[in-house]
Image (spheres, rainbow over the protein chains, first blue to last red):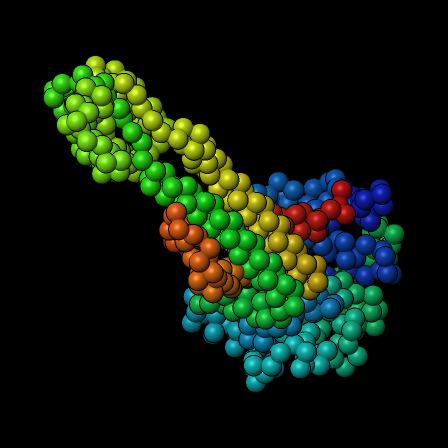
Length: 218
Length: 302
């Protein structure tokens, strides 16, 4: 599903973020990307969820070369990727229902399906009773569950989570992780960036360790 | 449903950023007011001169020996000219009668024959819509007439009128151009301020969720429309109410005896043009800013 060939990523000032990354992630995989702060975990995820593009090398998602995608194809591919952010990125002036429905509005889904899917996603994360609340009226854990609901509401082929438990205590972190594992058992490919070794050990899944922008064998 | 959602987003954001938007509304109102005001001055200046032109008479003087056929020919020419609003034929005898009334001349004792000393005259009044080409064509045809002697009109005044009419188009274009530029910058800066303040994440998120061109821009376009709509209505309201408040004073000023002139408000066409210009240039400003903003999101990349 995802193939990376000799990926390099530089930022302005010739700052190297990723060096010679080679990856192969199959459909249905569950993968942790780990490493210390500044190792390039978020940069690698940004390349995969198409927020940024490699400076050199080739990145193929669903057999499409991300650097050669036209605007329309890029939008289309992004609609099949669900992203969970550490800082949740919920729109503060939209209520829970509207935040979760946002990807479906963008996908131009019919009204009845939006309603059906939003309630199903909120039910899955256990927040179906809070549709009218606004993000700032919710706890950190609840906000992250809304973030997950927004990511899964469109049934993505790929679910990416960038430090999804970074702002949560251990108990809430396990809850969130359990949801992500469950999504994986339902067939979604899941990639999680985290530096929480405890969680990685607990779930015993495939891990890529990044250090100074390179993949380290461990 | 989808558009309702985007309109809702625009509406909520409009209220959330009320302080920024309020100052933009005032800016749009001021720009609209001044555009209406400048067009009002321009329209009334032209109308005023037009009225003076149409009130001023010109005289076509024919030779004293002009025959009846010659006079009918000139009359036919005048009748055929649409830019002449009114004409009067003054025969030598009727002119002489007037002279007699004013100066008590005894024609019998003086043995004066009016036809041999006074010319045939046509007094004409041009309509306010006359243009230079029509005027020149008319005068040229007139001069070709056999019985033509002289044509008297206040040429310098007429010249001023033609020049003003010609330049009014340029003034109008200049006003519209200033309006375009100012609304373009006002709106792009307003939306820009809002974006920098708290909308960066929202645009980024909609993009990451696969939002297309309209998904990203529509809420800001709606928001811009609200600003333009309210600002324009406010400017128009101020312009119309100040016009009616000042009307008695203006009427008093213009009705000074020699001419009576009633100022008029600019037409619906001009009002619609101002509104369309505001909308279009505002839209361009918004689209330009969002494009630059999105480009800026990826600027740190190589």
